[in-house]
Image (tube, rainbow, N blue to C red; front, side):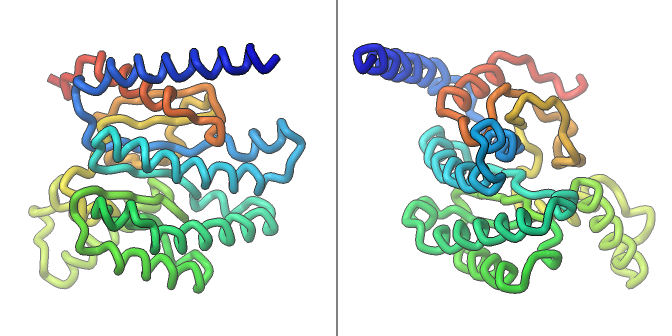
Length: 260
């Protein structure tokens, strides 16, 4: 049994190195976005409470950051909690908020964040979060606001339609105040009002969704117009480096024409 296990581990490591060799010299991805799906189903299959899945999923995010830094990915956007997720049972939502607070506290002192100058931002309707979490988010954003080597967006209390509505409200306010003429409202003006406006490259090159579901669920509806998609039949807590590398390899093999 132990011999078989060691053999499987060895095979995995060999495959991982082989994949790494394949992608390392290929097209570089500047911006990867991931829909972190399957935490609850992962827990249910193990007959555990949902928050065990969310806790395991949060731990996986920590690993993912290391992988993306090693790959040289400049920007990562993670879909962690949607506006619709507030409709889940209150005890589950409360536990998710506790997990989020713990993870944001870790970010504040994460040596990798500061060494690699990772600008961390929460995109979404932050005002819907508990006040203690709002304050913590502000602390994290303030601590990393001057970093510009890498970007980590955490979509929390996020909805793609909500983002577009919020952007439209900003545009309307500018027009009302006389700061913008109606005829000046174009795609560039609109993009400046999105949650991701602070980034040099808002649009993800690749969007990955775990759990086997094949839909965006409102994620980055504006920014994803020309993104490539990769849907993986693995729950987020079980996501491995080889899953990331295979998704990157798939991206590198695609022909991108941007409508031309």
